[in-house]
Length: 345
Ligand code: RAM
Image (cartoon, rainbow, N blue to C red; front, side):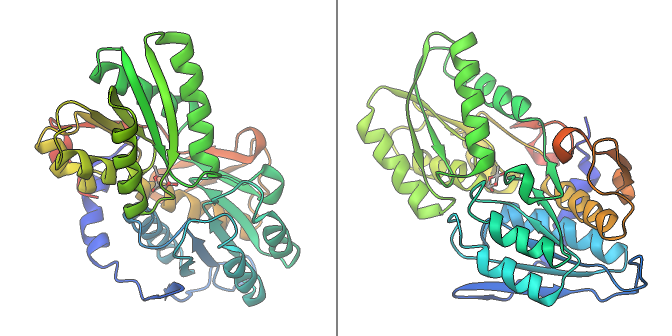
């Protein structure tokens, strides 16, 4: 288990200093300036581009990226759209390419929609690392995967099955309809349900677009439409928090279980008040940290992204590139009322 409690609590200080300058149509924040560690003696500039801004999950992962970039003396920037829609990241990719940044670290809302922009950036010399949510592999040099998709799917099915007595109607509240990561996990969850949980019926999958209000409204609509619903699985930190808030303040509390992927700080109240029994995640700070070191290894020419390439990611240690340019962070971790007090992110 790679999840490190010390690292998790170190996030408190980092998150507290996460004041990002955001404008109405997107934002950016710069920090760090190079001590100079690129292969040509220049600072390695790394731009993080999350699915959207304002999501504590990406605030945390990008803080990890910033910590890594500062550690190796590079220049860190975070930019991103307000909405997690398929091509909203394109202008940010174009700008980064024009600025000649060394590497872009991107979580994609769609496997293809940003592909042309990424390829243009790569033609201009920018290395592309996807993290959290991949594009199709031909558009990037590496994908930093938070945990195996099978592991992420299985832990969510296991949690909902345990919570509803392995029987009854459930629904999925996802992120954006085209999100590569959620769609991969949902396909695998369906397979796992079909193979091992014949008495659980998945009645619907709805999309909250990683927007709090939309996710809240979709939860309400699901509960109206399916009076026999026993559980909601939300494989997105935005969705699970909105669903838990809705259920917590309603007559459905205790009757409809909410689980999926969440951050401890967003879920703490609902675990403590009994709305949520368990949810899972990995350490987003470590994910960003690893992605930044992978970006540096590409920019420095230490690796090209081919299977078997090896690099070191500071305190996280050594990593090897696997098949299709994928680097795996570790295993998902389950949070319950017994351990949530140990985490602060
Ligand atoms: C949301 C985003 C992100 C996903 C997490 C679990 O923050 O959709 O891509 O990995 O949830």
